[in-house]
Length: 187
Image (cartoon, rainbow, N blue to C red; front, side, top):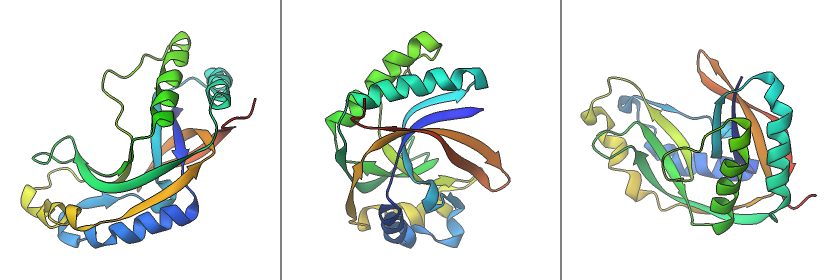
Protein backbone atom coordinates (compact mmCIF):
# COMPACT_ATOMS: atom_id res chain seq x y z
CA UNK A 1 0.00 0.00 0.00
CA UNK A 2 1.10 3.56 -0.72
CA UNK A 3 1.34 5.74 2.41
CA UNK A 4 2.16 9.27 3.49
CA UNK A 5 1.84 11.37 6.64
CA UNK A 6 -0.33 14.46 6.25
CA UNK A 7 -1.95 17.39 7.95
CA UNK A 8 -5.56 17.59 6.85
CA UNK A 9 -7.77 20.66 6.95
CA UNK A 10 -11.15 21.59 8.34
CA UNK A 11 -13.92 21.27 5.73
CA UNK A 12 -14.58 25.03 5.79
CA UNK A 13 -10.93 25.76 4.98
CA UNK A 14 -11.01 23.25 2.11
CA UNK A 15 -14.15 24.88 0.67
CA UNK A 16 -12.66 28.38 1.01
CA UNK A 17 -9.43 27.34 -0.75
CA UNK A 18 -11.49 25.77 -3.55
CA UNK A 19 -13.64 28.90 -3.93
CA UNK A 20 -10.60 31.20 -3.96
CA UNK A 21 -8.82 29.16 -6.63
CA UNK A 22 -11.87 28.58 -8.85
CA UNK A 23 -10.88 31.48 -11.18
CA UNK A 24 -7.91 29.35 -12.24
CA UNK A 25 -10.21 26.66 -13.65
CA UNK A 26 -10.13 27.60 -17.32
CA UNK A 27 -11.02 24.79 -19.77
CA UNK A 28 -8.14 25.32 -22.19
CA UNK A 29 -5.55 24.98 -19.41
CA UNK A 30 -5.45 21.13 -19.36
CA UNK A 31 -5.11 20.89 -15.57
CA UNK A 32 -6.52 18.08 -13.43
CA UNK A 33 -7.84 19.98 -10.41
CA UNK A 34 -7.61 18.26 -7.04
CA UNK A 35 -10.91 17.68 -5.26
CA UNK A 36 -11.18 19.94 -2.19
CA UNK A 37 -11.82 16.89 0.02
CA UNK A 38 -8.25 15.79 -0.80
CA UNK A 39 -6.50 19.07 0.11
CA UNK A 40 -3.74 18.45 2.65
CA UNK A 41 -0.08 19.12 3.44
CA UNK A 42 2.17 16.11 2.90
CA UNK A 43 4.58 16.00 5.83
CA UNK A 44 6.41 12.79 4.89
CA UNK A 45 5.91 10.64 1.81
CA UNK A 46 6.60 6.97 2.54
CA UNK A 47 5.72 5.33 -0.77
CA UNK A 48 4.97 1.62 -1.05
CA UNK A 49 4.77 0.04 2.40
CA UNK A 50 4.23 -3.58 3.44
CA UNK A 51 1.05 -3.98 5.49
CA UNK A 52 3.11 -5.47 8.32
CA UNK A 53 4.89 -2.11 8.81
CA UNK A 54 1.76 0.00 9.34
CA UNK A 55 1.58 -0.51 13.11
CA UNK A 56 5.26 0.45 13.58
CA UNK A 57 4.81 3.53 11.39
CA UNK A 58 1.68 4.52 13.35
CA UNK A 59 3.68 4.19 16.59
CA UNK A 60 6.35 6.54 15.23
CA UNK A 61 3.72 9.07 14.13
CA UNK A 62 2.05 8.83 17.57
CA UNK A 63 5.41 9.47 19.26
CA UNK A 64 6.17 12.56 17.19
CA UNK A 65 2.62 13.91 17.53
CA UNK A 66 2.77 13.59 21.30
CA UNK A 67 5.79 15.94 21.36
CA UNK A 68 3.87 18.88 19.83
CA UNK A 69 0.84 20.91 20.79
CA UNK A 70 -1.82 21.85 18.24
CA UNK A 71 -0.91 24.97 16.26
CA UNK A 72 -2.27 27.42 13.73
CA UNK A 73 -1.06 27.40 10.15
CA UNK A 74 -1.57 30.03 7.48
CA UNK A 75 -2.30 29.22 3.84
CA UNK A 76 -1.98 31.62 0.93
CA UNK A 77 0.01 32.52 -2.13
CA UNK A 78 0.03 30.41 -5.27
CA UNK A 79 2.88 28.97 -7.28
CA UNK A 80 4.06 26.10 -9.46
CA UNK A 81 6.56 23.25 -9.27
CA UNK A 82 9.17 22.55 -10.48
CA UNK A 83 9.54 25.92 -12.23
CA UNK A 84 7.49 28.57 -14.04
CA UNK A 85 8.99 27.45 -17.35
CA UNK A 86 8.04 23.78 -16.77
CA UNK A 87 5.04 23.79 -14.43
CA UNK A 88 3.71 20.34 -13.44
CA UNK A 89 2.00 21.15 -10.12
CA UNK A 90 -0.05 24.19 -9.06
CA UNK A 91 0.04 24.78 -5.30
CA UNK A 92 -1.01 27.02 -2.45
CA UNK A 93 1.76 27.85 0.01
CA UNK A 94 1.98 27.70 3.78
CA UNK A 95 3.19 30.46 6.04
CA UNK A 96 6.46 29.58 7.72
CA UNK A 97 5.63 27.60 10.86
CA UNK A 98 8.52 26.27 12.99
CA UNK A 99 6.40 23.44 14.44
CA UNK A 100 5.65 22.11 10.95
CA UNK A 101 9.33 21.89 10.02
CA UNK A 102 10.26 20.36 13.38
CA UNK A 103 7.53 17.74 12.99
CA UNK A 104 8.70 16.89 9.49
CA UNK A 105 12.34 16.60 10.61
CA UNK A 106 11.50 14.43 13.62
CA UNK A 107 9.31 12.12 11.54
CA UNK A 108 12.04 11.75 8.94
CA UNK A 109 14.63 10.91 11.62
CA UNK A 110 12.42 8.47 13.51
CA UNK A 111 11.34 6.64 10.35
CA UNK A 112 14.94 5.82 9.33
CA UNK A 113 15.15 2.73 11.61
CA UNK A 114 12.05 1.40 9.81
CA UNK A 115 13.84 1.65 6.46
CA UNK A 116 12.58 5.02 5.22
CA UNK A 117 15.35 7.32 4.04
CA UNK A 118 14.76 11.08 4.31
CA UNK A 119 13.97 12.83 1.04
CA UNK A 120 17.00 14.43 -0.53
CA UNK A 121 15.26 17.73 -1.15
CA UNK A 122 14.32 20.58 1.14
CA UNK A 123 10.88 20.36 2.77
CA UNK A 124 8.54 22.78 1.01
CA UNK A 125 5.08 22.56 2.64
CA UNK A 126 2.22 23.26 0.26
CA UNK A 127 -1.27 22.21 -0.76
CA UNK A 128 -1.49 20.76 -4.26
CA UNK A 129 -4.51 22.25 -5.99
CA UNK A 130 -3.86 21.09 -9.55
CA UNK A 131 -1.68 18.85 -11.71
CA UNK A 132 -0.81 19.83 -15.26
CA UNK A 133 -1.73 17.11 -17.76
CA UNK A 134 0.96 15.60 -19.97
CA UNK A 135 1.70 17.27 -23.30
CA UNK A 136 0.24 20.58 -22.17
CA UNK A 137 1.84 23.53 -23.91
CA UNK A 138 2.87 26.68 -22.11
CA UNK A 139 0.31 28.57 -24.22
CA UNK A 140 -2.48 26.33 -22.93
CA UNK A 141 -1.38 26.99 -19.35
CA UNK A 142 -0.76 30.75 -19.65
CA UNK A 143 -4.34 31.71 -18.65
CA UNK A 144 -3.76 29.97 -15.30
CA UNK A 145 -0.21 31.22 -14.75
CA UNK A 146 -1.27 34.81 -15.46
CA UNK A 147 -3.93 34.61 -12.73
CA UNK A 148 -1.77 33.14 -9.93
CA UNK A 149 -0.69 36.52 -8.56
CA UNK A 150 -4.21 37.95 -8.85
CA UNK A 151 -5.60 35.66 -6.16
CA UNK A 152 -4.89 37.45 -2.90
CA UNK A 153 -6.34 34.76 -0.66
CA UNK A 154 -5.22 33.93 2.86
CA UNK A 155 -6.74 31.63 5.47
CA UNK A 156 -5.79 29.84 8.66
CA UNK A 157 -6.47 26.45 10.16
CA UNK A 158 -5.77 24.89 13.52
CA UNK A 159 -3.78 21.68 13.09
CA UNK A 160 -4.63 19.11 15.75
CA UNK A 161 -3.36 15.83 14.28
CA UNK A 162 -0.93 14.01 12.05
CA UNK A 163 -2.74 11.58 9.78
CA UNK A 164 -1.31 8.41 8.27
CA UNK A 165 -2.88 8.34 4.83
CA UNK A 166 -3.33 5.56 2.30
CA UNK A 167 -3.26 6.60 -1.35
CA UNK A 168 -5.11 4.50 -3.93
CA UNK A 169 -4.94 5.15 -7.66
CA UNK A 170 -8.30 5.25 -9.45
CA UNK A 171 -9.31 6.07 -13.03
CA UNK A 172 -9.98 9.66 -11.98
CA UNK A 173 -6.71 10.07 -10.04
CA UNK A 174 -5.60 9.42 -6.48
CA UNK A 175 -7.97 8.88 -3.59
CA UNK A 176 -6.88 9.20 0.04
CA UNK A 177 -8.03 7.47 3.21
CA UNK A 178 -6.90 8.23 6.75
CA UNK A 179 -5.90 4.88 8.29
CA UNK A 180 -4.49 6.27 11.56
CA UNK A 181 -4.94 9.62 13.32
CA UNK A 182 -2.32 10.83 15.85
CA UNK A 183 -3.56 13.73 17.95
CA UNK A 184 -0.97 16.44 18.70
CA UNK A 185 0.00 16.75 22.35
CA UNK A 186 -1.60 13.46 23.41
CA UNK A 187 0.74 11.07 25.21
